[in-house]
Length: 201
Image (tube, rainbow, N blue to C red):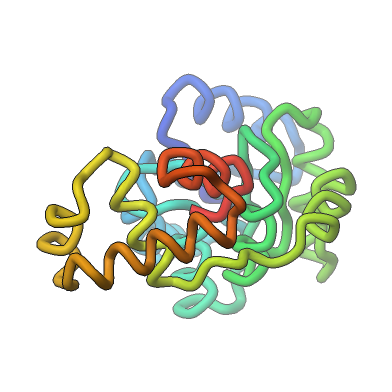
C-alpha cells in the first residue's frame, strides 16, 4: 500500500482529492494538512511514501515544503500540484527536489499513475508545462531582486521597503530598477505582475 500525505489549504479540494485517491486499491491517504509548515511533521509522524503538495499554501509554499522534505527525508517522493501552470513554478519545484509536477485539472487517474511512477523512480512532468518552461528560460531575477519586488507588491514606498528589508532607499531603488529592466516592464506594478504570471515570485 502506498502511503500518501496530502497538503492542500482548500478543504473541499483536499477532501475531493483524498476521496478520489482513496478509490485506488493500492493508495492510502494517511495524512492531510492545510498549511506548508505542517508538512514535515506530518510526513514524519505518518511514515509516508509520497507527499502531494499544493503550491499555494499558508505557512510555506509547496515549493518551500518540497525543499524541506527533500533535505530532511530524501527517500520521500514529492508530487507538486498547481492550479496555474506557470513555467517558473515548474522550474522551482524541480530545483526543490520534486519528482512530479502536475496541474490540478488533470484527470484523477493521471495523478494516481504519477504517484506509482515516481515510486518506480520516474520523473513525471506535464508535457505542455515542460515545453513552456524550456521556452521561457531561467528566472532572470536574483534572490534579492525577488525579495524586494515581492515586498513592493503591496504598493509600499521605497522608504517603507528600506525599513522593512533593512536596506538603504537607494539600494531598494536600484534593485527595483534592475528588476523592472530585466522584465521589460514599464513600472514596478507591471514588473510584479509579469514575475507572478511567470511563477518567478
